[in-house]
Amino acid sequence: MLWLKQLYHSLFGKEISMIRVIKVAYLKKLVVSLLIVFLLGCAPGSTLTYYHDPSMDFAAVRSVAVMPFENLSREQNAGERVRDVFANSLLSTGAVYVIPSGEVSRGIARAGMVNPAVPSMEEIGKFAGIIRVDAVITGTVTEYGQVRSGNTTANVISMNVQMIEVQALRTVWTASATKGGISIWDRLFGAGGEPMNDVTMAAVNDVLNKLFM
Amino acid sequence: MFSINFSCKIVICLLILLVCLSGCSATNNQTISLTDEHPPPGKKLLVAVLPLTNLSSTPAPLDEISQLLLGIFKQQGLDILPAQTLESFIEKHRIRYAGGIDETTARDFRYETGADAVLITSVELYSDVPPPKIALTCRLVSTGNNPKILWMDGVGLAGDDSLGILELSLIEDPRELLEKALSQLSTSLGNYLAGKSYWTDSQRDIVKFWPKRFYRSPILEREWKYTVAVVPFFNLSERRYAGEIIALNFVEQMMIQRKFSVIEPGIVRQLLLEMRIIMDDGISLADAHALFSKLNADLILAGKIFDYQDYPGTSGKAKVDFSALAIERRSREVVWVCQSHNEGDYGVFFFDWGQINTAHVMASEMVASALETLAE
Image 1 (tube, chains in turn red, brown):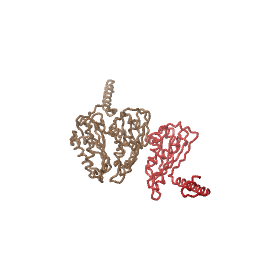
Image 2 (cartoon, helix red, strand yellow):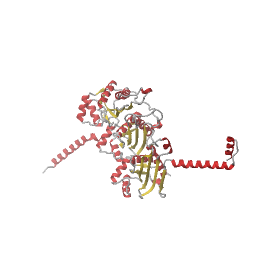
Image 3 (cartoon, chains in turn orange, red):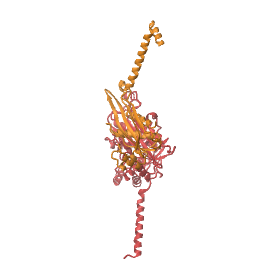
Image 4 (cartoon, chains in turn red, blue):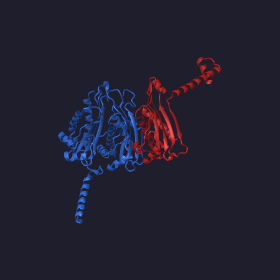
């Protein structure tokens, strides 16, 4: 705090008491702290929760089938878009083989699944026997598209996925992510947020990072 | 009662009949091969110009485009099959699909009309709202036993592609733009016919068009020229025929890159129809297996198209979003996937400099970049 005292002296040509210097220093800290809290509050939404079955050996999963995602958003084809990005991203990791969606569709038809986005454990067992996969991934897109706040708009995605191991028919991994939303930058400059595809990729990356943790 | 001799005669007659009938059925079950001889570049060709296919999902002056096309290609020295002969051939064989040519039609073309090749043209975009926009794809396919794509090129133009100083280069007349597009195609075809290279080395921005995500299996051989069958993409976009358009883009870029042998899409289409393959949510491994049994292909390329967006007039932006995958013959596995999306104004900051106005141009660059990851 000595530098503050010297600065005051050089600027105004008179001494300042140490108590006053301490007050100014505390005031500065308070302003900086409030600024940090304010900026954190304005950050775009990015939350992530996950569950890993501790007894599961994920290295044993060699092939997975990604089922059609349930679409709870207003955007048509949102489920299919997110599923496609997710399946391609998962295959791109090189860690597991992802069955092509056409083959998954054939398996769904042959297993006679009523609602492939939300299959029962019996249906998954039957489906896995036909397609021959080690695990099945299901997912839900809860939010996809633009959000508006005042005059500002931005893209947002909210999704969750789960992996079901087909031998024991139990859920071994779940994860959810929310990406995008209105940031302080969007509010100040009206940038319109990130493109929907970029937001989707970011959310899928977050989810996959939690799978390979 | 019949004697033994009489029974033997009947059995012999039946056997001969069976042999004859099985001999007659053999032609349709042959595996299609790509090894036959085709007209070499530089040879004077007799070409049948098939009616134009409109993939723009909007009304387009197909007759006018066709007449201009014939005029320009005649100037290049092509012998065009007379319209009367072509019409009577189409009527006789009841040809309804002009977007491709299958093996049987190609053979009949050669032996009945004497045409060396057919020219297949697709109109992908036509908008006469100022500034006009047009996108065309042309390919020359050899006739005879094993049709092969000899030349293929595409062009996508907008009237405001290059405005120039004080907008002096703005094209507002759709016919002028059409002539410019056909002239580019004609030059490209002329180069092919003269035995020169018709492709130009791309000057594209690698970062801008590079796939956002891709996977290439290590089982794919490097420097190997794969034979590829491209099936229409599963269309989830609002644009009708987007699946066919993006598949054509892949075929075109494979031809231009010269790193792949591509099977004529008409042959693939005919097989899909014959085998009654309906691709619900993309191609299944069982469908791929069936196609491999009939096609001499190493890879089957399929995918999904989510956005293929053009815009009339000045307000809007071109948008393309697709994913593609390749299934390999030996392993029967997905060996390559690619995810790519882009918008016409991506990376554009000042005065629309660098903006891409047609989805065709953007898709071509994106597909070319995607194929580089497959052929690396």
